[in-house]
Image 1 (cartoon, rainbow, N blue to C red):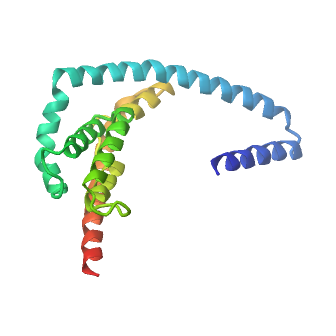
Image 2 (image 1 turned 60 degrees about the vertical axis):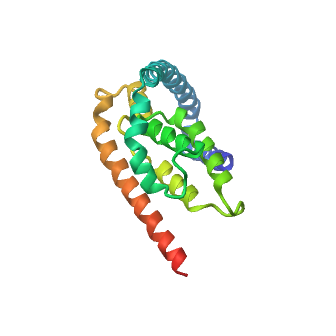
Image 3 (image 1 turned 90 degrees about the vertical axis):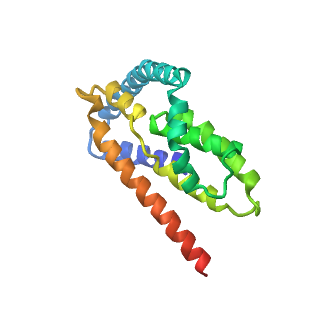
Length: 194
């Protein structure tokens, strides 16, 4: 579907350029865009390598485990059906901690593992459990303290203050998380009330 949309936009762009008599701008734009794409990709490699190194230090230093301990009571409240010592709870906590630190690439495999573990606890394998729905809502809204990827993108595109996004990101993700949890609980009550 996305490929078809891109193909449509490209064809329309070329047609508009041809009709307006500015077809030479197509070649110039294509070459400039390709150059910018390569520049951004190389910039991201160095920045993401740096941040992944920092995150590895955080993991090795035990800070990630500290975050997991801090979040445990919160996780118990959110996932009352999941036993505290079950591997699903560990995967959930690690995923939430990784999202807090903006480690999107590291959080994804942890999220998949958590969902796999939650499916083992699920009584009805064909329908998502309450815990699975809650986890999906929280993971999608994901409260983020350090938006690593966004900072890296802003640095790669030449932002003069790439960390300026931190404050607004915390507020935005806090709001999205509150809304996600509220809607999840609200829909759960409505569904059970039927």
